[in-house]
Length: 93
View 1 (cartoon, rainbow, N blue to C red):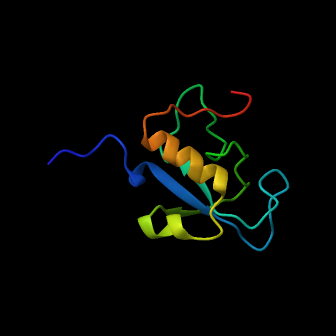
View 2: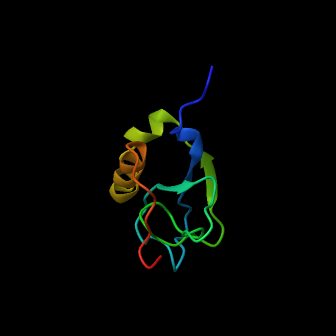
């Protein structure tokens, strides 16, 4: 059985901790990150273009997490666009 080109396995989730990073999102949001970094892409950025925290708490991405109210709306929109074939685009890349 072949695996589809798009899969939630290609992404990881970053959970915020009690101290928000100075360079990342200042809201308590869950952000998505591509599991496989691409050359020339935003390897240090979330799907919404935000910088990764200094010490991210990685979580595997699961379907149920897409319904979490803390999920960043911009990360979710980018995930949906990539699901339908859009290439990853990060601000300043």
